Image (tube, rainbow, N blue to C red; front, top):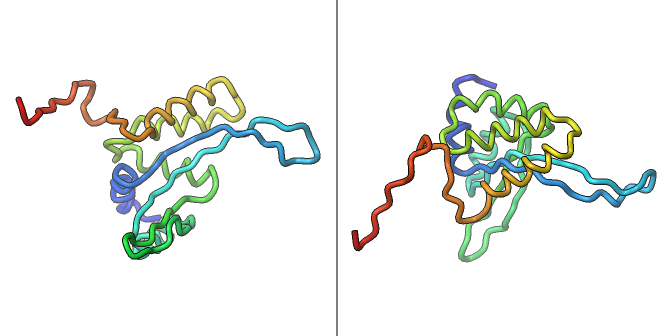
Length: 154
């Protein structure tokens, strides 16, 4: 991976990426009792197949088609790095360049480092879900200052 590409990747993740974690119930195993399992993901969704191939060439991972093309929409693709070790390496490399998703990256790194501590992992899952909820406007770009939004009537 070329160092000069990290800032561009950070920009892609800030703009079109998702940093997420979740808890799920694993009841499919026959060799043990059902249990909770945790997982995390870094992904970039875009309609450019050229971008997906570029990401794989420079950062590895893989992509999948999230939505087939229709008369009204382009096909949509999602790129993901493979494995927690690669996710951790990627997050550490892009962290200095992130603007919007710096807090999410920090939480995801903590999630990976925790191993199997369920109480803190649950808290991180909930925090990341709050950031990823549609309509959320919280970002790291304002340094704690309230946004100055003007309406048409101001």
